[in-house]
Length: 479
Image (cartoon, rainbow, N blue to C red; front, side, top):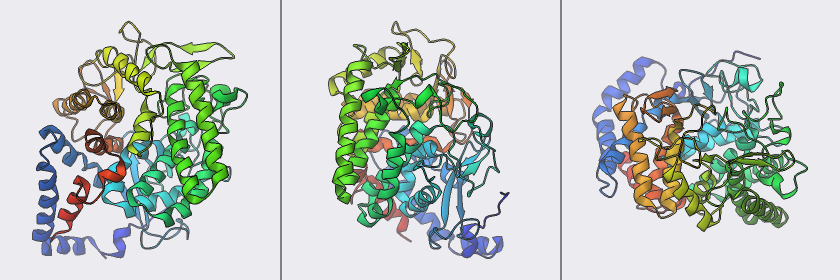
């Protein structure tokens, strides 16, 4: 059905553009003081380098540019709280807009749940309401994004009530678990856990049922047949997770680490909820997946990108972002996903190869001899901006604070030097730092998780009374 028409939530407060202008004119002095107040808190955070202070402030331009806030009226259902409405972020704003692609929100969510937890909750309720009966989380609320390659009919770029399962099932569900747990860790709200736990449980069961026949390796593998179950036309290997256009087969260290991290989160939720049977099931899955990871995918100096035992398909290239699951777990106050000694060795390997191949970040792949990997994914010298930030934080949590900080600085410098700070592209060329794809990608707000990693804090500590986040909020409230 559609196209649908939605009403801006602000229309409940202001009857016209004139009323908005009158409000701004009347309250200009107070609003300006509040803006300068919260920015002054960040600029005054002297333990952060100047470039990071400025980047943290500037990156927030994506919040108003990319956001939609709809009032609770049809086609949005009665599940929506009229007080909160339905908040959503558009990613791929220019090229292929879609509202709330779940893996994109996984990247973008930190400053939203930090500073506007009510809006984050509104979005989470949308995901829960749109969840499919098989437990699968919706990949997107609606939009152009993914129509052709995802195998479903695209909608208007601002559609908020036409959810689709999309084409990244192996990471969509874990992305949902992650942002649910972020909100819970941010707020400590036990009523929230009661509301969302059944949804998280059914979603986790769906994710853990995507692969069959490979024993303990199922836990860390891509779906059966190495293709997404929602695609109407087979396209093995390349549209399975948020790293698109890269071939994946069988057990995959990136997917596996993400699965293991979110299983830790679900285990903690199950124990708090009193569901001891499912908590034990999560423990069992973690034990199985960890054993498969450490016995099947460890190469001696890094984790293999993938290995499918039955077919013998294996990649021995070095994937720079293989340890994303470790960052996820540590940001949530949980234990590491990978063996600590091996993770350190893998980070050393990535630094000597993928990070050495570019002055701006870390190429997605490298050969073991430190050369480019040709004819793969998005090109031999390409990287994603938010993934560089996540890798930088992985180094920080592993005790390599200065290297992680330098990695993030190089990426921010590439954006500034090439005019991307007010465009925020999704991908950059490693050789030049020039934009390769994307405009105004909200994913890049991942940068806001970096101050916590610099201090070795999890999300709960990063938002505690007296923290940078708390002081920003208090300053913004002062009239």
